[in-house]
Length: 292
Image 1: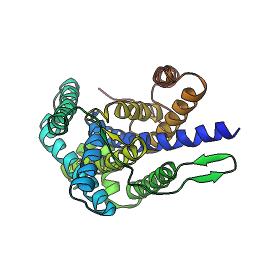
Image 2: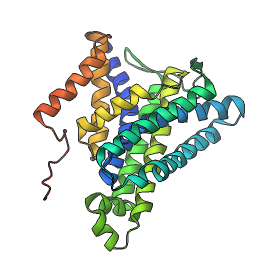
Image 3: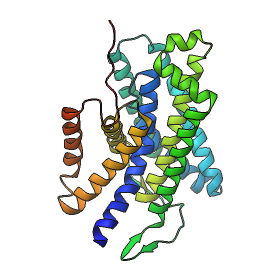
Image 4: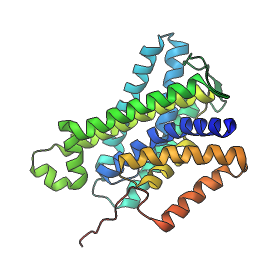
């Protein structure tokens, strides 16, 4: 029983990171109606920025984290302005190809600057392990759960209670109507990219603290799994991204421990296929009828 509880807690820790990344996917899709496949690489950029600020500039942890989050938020806005804004009225395929190209561009730049060798990086989270009966919870997992919960509650309150959040919901429903009501659509979309990229930076920090290794392809697989989590929960639904991420992390942890570590990824993607066959809109997604 203790072993099962430990795997559940580990799954919640990993799933929380997926949920933070999935929030960026689902927010951008809900408002801009596009899939930003470069989003996973923001995690990698955040990890490298944290590494440089801590090891090269010797900055305090809090300052390094603040710089990392700010840098990734600005990067997200820059990517949107340069790569995606000119393609607002372009076919979906053109936007998809651009997003994939931006992903490869970020990976290639990291490869040129830092080379392909993984960099060992000591965790900045210095929290003692906690004993829950026969189960041991690492300090990194504990901090991950707490930080993720704070981020999710803050984001939910921001979307539901603030004027900017109301603007985001209005743009998500109907861009043209929102513009007629005086909402700055361009600024709202940029803000969405900034928030999503900032959350990806937090996920990157937590991810590198957990695995303590950085490489240019660091964000590729977590990014894909986070996209799976967003689709699983219902793409465009913020609560769905949270639930999908946590559920995906638990499934991955349990299957790795009790079925096969080699089949873990296959099981995760198999669950996605099963959910889409039963409920194509995802767990919390809604089917929409579009008039043509």
